[in-house]
Image (cartoon, rainbow, N blue to C red; front, side, top):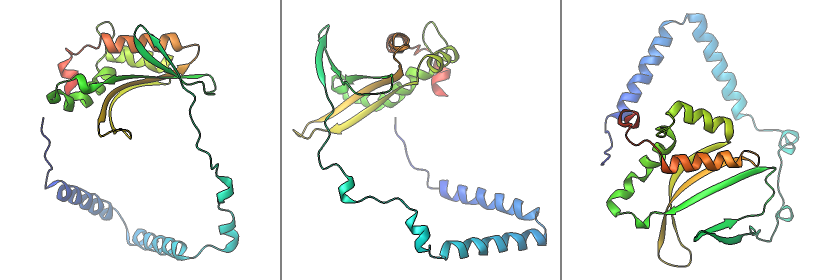
Length: 201
């Protein structure tokens, strides 16, 4: 897949905008134009008028003493479940479960890496082998606070090696956590990749 810039896109946008303005101008009376001109001048005067000290005093400001000089660390408890490392962060989230499933994309052939972004979108836009897109979308909306997938790359601070990751993320209330896990299982294992027409959309 190769993407190339369109050298005419800016010109097309400018022409469309000019056509829109010309159409709007054609519907205006002389009185409308005078009113718009006066409003523009009033706005320019307002924007160019400096704020008074009283107005500036209303703006919030921070002092250096307001900042915590200590770096906050996220508590992490590393466990292993069926041979897979699991990180648990014991943080107050007001009853919300945040779950990230992280997959190392270095195992993929290099020629497949550019397609990760399309696969990420497909996971929640195609439906599964047992649910079409509409049913899956309604299920996600009713049971969770959102589910999505994305590819992610970053540089490691401890080596010259980069990380290429595929993330599947979701959140829900504690009570709906089993439903969240079930949805993630379904989109990971049963996404209907045969929906070619839907994929092209």
